[in-house]
Amino acid sequence: MRILQGLFGAGAWIGSELITEAGDRTFAAGQGNWSVESGAEVSWDNTDMDFACTGANAVRLAVTLTEGTVYRLGFNITAFTSGDLNCYIGGSAIAVSGEAVTSFSVDAPAGAGDWIQFASSNFIGSIDNVSVKRVF
Figure (cartoon, rainbow, N blue to C red):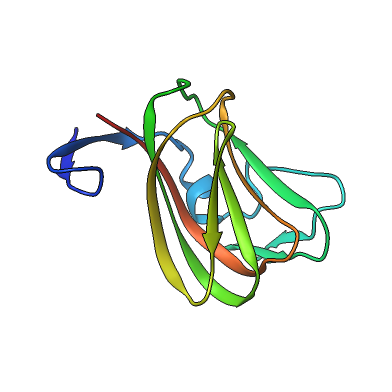
């Protein structure tokens, strides 16, 4: 089922959710299928993903993407102390400057790679409700 939404221009069609495991979107079961970079300061408390970054940190989730195709990445910052968070759709970077608890949504073309990633060297906060959908 497609729904009509307008964040990527008037009348953009949005595809179905590409993160098929609900626990990978909500962290209800903790880490789920997310891979963690060695040494990353990330934890899960069964409600969100918590970052306490003081060095290079990254977490990645395999998602089937097509390079150059536009996707909508959405998530909630459920707690925020300081720092910036970088998001990747495939290899395409999207910088998020956090200043508050908020919902975030961006439409961007995927780079090479079948994954989404959150990375930072200074973000202290939590994210939840991660979503990836194709924009038509």
